[in-house]
Image 1 (cartoon, rainbow, N blue to C red):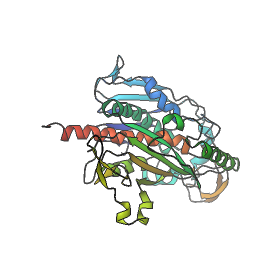
Image 2: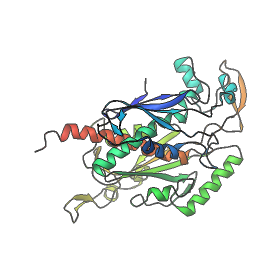
Image 3: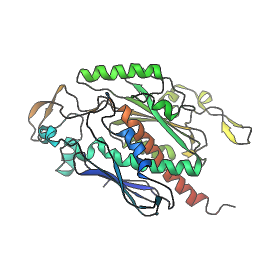
Image 4: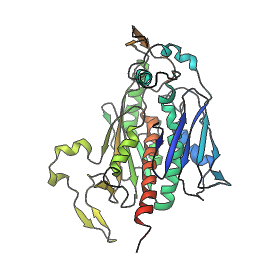
Length: 364
């Protein structure tokens, strides 16, 4: 239950952090799309652990295998299964967690719901589950680019109180990938890295904000009333581990403006297209894409596992203290960037297929 996302472009992720492997089944992908393991691997490499000094030292290549749904380099229209086998597992690092609840983790709530849990590295609640999302997102990105020219770029906007200056309308993937913190503001990136290292050396963790932009999104995507585009985007990114907040367009800052200050006035551009002079709506109006760039922000909390001792209780209710063991990110933000991009791609791809089915079948 709760492992499937999407309507027409639908994914189901599977696997646990320290089990045999993790992956995804993708249903509804159009046939004859050229896809390879290399296309997916490129995105997984951006998400994988051990890629820099400010991420978890767990050594996983996250090499993907396409098990079904692709033949001679093209999708068949049948379910696509992508599998990534776990290699560098150390379940012994989590022996104490079998008996003791980690503060701000899902240990206690999983026990409350299921009465049983895989305590090895968080099991199903681990961020390692997002491998399946990123793999599926790679395919969704390819469909969006091929059919509509959509480009999705995410980046680290802020860590703690340190905020970067980035233009979402012009930022490029190359700029994002130019440093290990995935912040295209080079000057700010140095400060962000220094802050993460300082907190890591103290045995602590920090959080921040990932911003993501989708450009060239076709007008009309999104379905009122309950399937508004921003509502589905919110659900998508808020399902990511450690996510705690969502904004689109002006977000909470928009509450400080008047209607006359906030409204996006219309005009007709040189090509005759109806555009908005500003984009405080963030690319959607009435839950439907208006053709402007879709800009979202996702807040991520500090990583729950830290080396400092914290008060907690055992599964039998006895009070105790616990210091985190195992290998964890001092800040999830750099690796969260491809996760946010993937979830945005999955939503847009699903809505693109839905829009085609409902609104373009009987075009005049």
